[in-house]
Image (cartoon, rainbow, N blue to C red; front, side, top):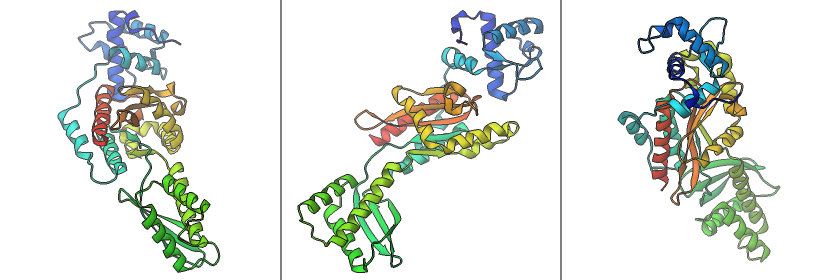
Length: 347
């Protein structure tokens, strides 16, 4: 069913609809005509309100989840609300201060992104999401530490100071001296290069037979570089923080939906696809429930905004995910502010 334009609703219908939505966003529960009639601003009898609610239900904007007279906004109704009726609030000074305090240029950019996402999660009481910009790390040092006769620990120190370890299998007959030779060669000849540049140089020297190391050490260097190149391509580019917020007391009556959402959060590549849809916007975008197939079962909402690099191009997306009864008016500008703060950091 197509959602009717906001302008097609009568003033009375708009007032009733807004109060139903406001009540739902605050309590998560259906609201009845008798409850709404107590609001003096409406100045309508329960019977009049009931008739208006019935009309709104026929338009697909409200639904009755049980046999009771209470109504909830549908996903179409929430879409109408956020697009045509919601008044976005300014991000409070306290929220801005907490977000800015979480973002620091000390350490790897991934750390700053994770901290900003955690702060956004805490302030919104949702799970925070961020797509990490894809960037090629540069090499500072790679060393190989013998573990057993057939395995070694490959240790990579990247240009940003991050350290990662991987266990690799060794060809038969590789000794400790070959491990040292391979590590020294990479550190001396390839420091400052990206993994792709290092692999290209190694292949070129092998083709031209200009290697300053023997074939066994060259094979080990190629294997070490390949491990991190493959690992980097497969590495999740999504950081999720604050899943525990989805299990608070207000969700106790809807645990099946929460379990479904947590399962969906495990499928990171699908969420990456969803967040990539927010790259095209200049500000936060809102995805409500089954508008995206990924969250059609859990009935969740995502608010996401792109952030930009030094050249102005979009490099990632930051946002939150939670139940459809989010405080959209508060969280939308909060997500926008976080995206703007990350853009300043990266620039």
